[in-house]
Length: 245
Image 1: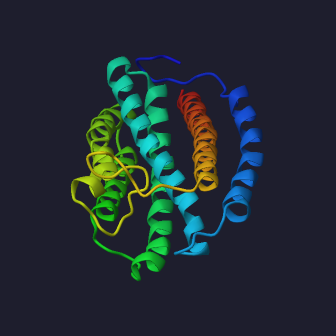
Image 2: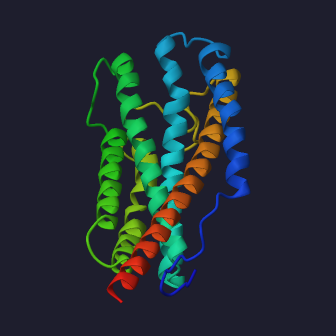
C-alpha cells in the first residue's frame, strides 16, 4: 500500500486477530444474554423491562468509543495521508451509527415504562439524536462523488469536529440537571449516583466488554471488506486500461 496515493495492491486477507475475536464473541454474547435475562434479579420498580438497561448502556458506550476512534484515525489520516487510517475511520463511524440507532431504539422502550412516554426532548435524548445525525452526515460526505482523497480530507475534519458532541451527550444530564434520565454512577458534586445491585453491575460490565469485543470484530471485518472493494476497483481499472490500450 502506498501511503501517499492510497493504492491497495495486495489481495486482502482476514487477520488472525479477527478470527480469534469472532470465535470468542459468540460464547460471550450467549453468556451476556444469560446474565441479563436469567441470572440478574428483576428490578423492583420497572420490572422486566429494566433488563434493556444492560444492552442500552453497553451500546451507548460502544457508540461513544466508535466516534472517538473516528476522531483518532481522522487525525492520523490528516498527518500521514495513509488510506488505511481513512478506512478505519469510515468503518468505525458506520458501526457507531448502528450502535447509536440501538441506543435510540432501546431508550424509548425503557422510557415508555419509566416516564410513560416514548420520547421526551430531555438533554440526553436530544444530544444523542444530534450526535446520530452528525455521523449520518459524516457517512454521507464519504459517499459523495469525487476523488477519495478529497472526500477523506473533508470527512476527517468533520469527524474530528463531530466528536466534540460525545462528551456533551455523556455530561448532558449532569450539566442540565435532567430529572427524567437516571444517573446511576455519579450525581452532583460528590458524584454519588443511585447505585446498582452487585449482580446487575457484573452483568452490565460483562455486557459492555462483550459489545466492545463485537465492535472490534465488526471493525476488522468492515475494513477487510473495504480493502476488497478497493482491490476490485484496481482490477477493473487495469482491465479497462488493457482494453483501451
